[in-house]
Length: 224
Ligand code: G3P
Image (cartoon, rainbow, N blue to C red; front, side):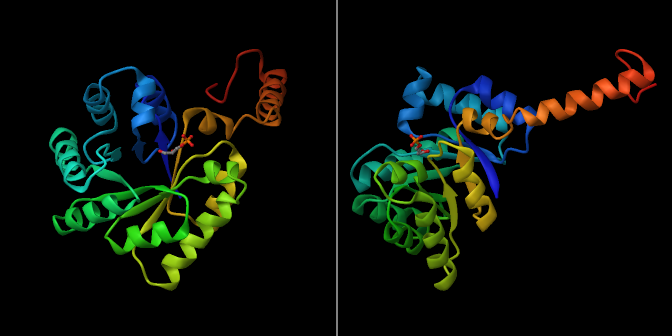
């Protein structure tokens, strides 16, 4: 499973890219609004941090097909032709996806709450679909089960579309999808940091250090 950052905080993106094998960044209009910066200012900085080859998913905002097409072309012009254009899985969005797929544009179907939205986006040529795990949980359904069902639909219908699972609030949701072999997940910095927040982990590492220092002296490491 590829891990992406679902955030536009450039300091957090730089830090996480430095520490972990991160495959890209996703944003949506709400994430951009949270940054408090103008959309292309922050997106161009993100592109420069992650490099021109990394996956950057950027969402359209217009509500009608023609507007979505204009948004998509502007995104590609400003951020590079390999940028994945995220389009909401609604009727106008599907219509735009079909046209953009014919142009060879890389597409991510987003705002996915139901398996048939994902199926339709895949049929329209989306490279990824983004089901919202935690938001589905909050509606009283099982977000992880919905993602697994989408994967089964893709496998059983030979659809070459990957899942970019989104909207996570905890490690368990991510763990279950990683174990199922889901292609990718996009996760906020706090959830990524939380993957390793078990106090047993630093306690074990501290005990190793203390034992070694008893043998060799304070501050000593294997670089003796
Ligand atoms: O990009 C959409 C998705 O990641 C939403 O996440 O945390 O707002 O439910 P969240």
